[in-house]
Length: 64
Length: 400
Image 1 (cartoon, rainbow over the protein chains, first blue to last red):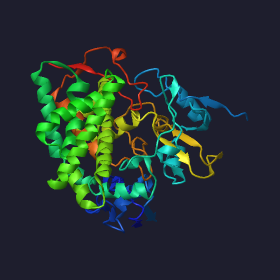
Image 2 (cartoon, helix red, strand yellow):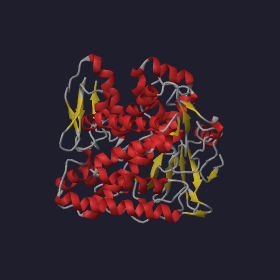
Image 3 (tube, rainbow over the protein chains, first blue to last red):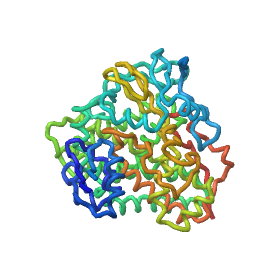
Image 4 (cartoon, each protein chain N blue to C red):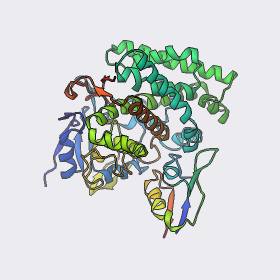
């Protein structure tokens, strides 16, 4: 799995960090998404998919 | 098929816990139905979860307040169109204006920043509980706990000096109280605005580590009206909403003793309980609105440019296509994907703070008052049935 995030689309809701703080973080400056682990282990795949689905701005893409 | 037109939003509830039953009928039959607005406009009422989500996530549907027709009445008169959003009130703006203001705040509302506030929120919550105890063995939970907790948290965020918090709280409470006349409420709201404007000026000369000072530092081009508007928006968005969730959430837990027992047996269920309360009791019952900027085909319907869509978040959160057994309150279910904070780029900016206030608030309340109980029968609890934000006006409770 490959996780991509587009910080220019991000609206800083924090849903991704709430869903999987090992894969996602928020920048200290403007709260936009930062991917911590672009190729997460299998145990994080379900949460990464959920984060992509929950993202209100559609800023997260998961390539299986 | 003949097209049916709803006239007015369904508002009649059969009980305190479920949205109007008519919404459920509409959702099953026509999750996007025509709606005749009080001013005569023919728009839409959207009740299906997936459709509400699509509309909120699609920038062809505008949030600009001056484009919306208003779906609720005040008394018998339709409310006219609203003026454009005033400076800083970015909830009623589209990109790029909305983006400019929101970006200045997102860095201050991150999950990490909000978690850092937990200790302070806990102090505020325990302070209110101590005051309740000092006064005896009964209280109105709304005035003693649900309203002051978020109000004090906002004072903390905005950097309201301690000695001025009392009058600030009095005025915000008067502005929100049902018993206040329209004139009293308006006057109190103006005093709150003036207070925040004055606070902004003081923060410009003597900055602190609060949000208003942060905004001023983040963008030197923001004028006092813009910062004041953002401060007022944070107050409105963060006070009445959280307060009503604390009041109504307590009523819901007290009325579902098996669910409360499950939470007491396993306090780690608190995060999940908060999400389920948000889903089950969707307090933003009327206000979610978008207006089409261009013709859009959605859900098999043609929405024309200029048509307003009223989005029913309570109906979306009870959609059986999204949630199993949607009308059951179940603290162990996954309520993930609920629409209570909205969706799209306007999704609630303060949601991580709201979650923390609720987690700490409910956990402390039921821990510190192990025998907390309603002092009146459920059907005597006064409900905010016709208010934009649903909840309880008062919640008489007792403990020993």
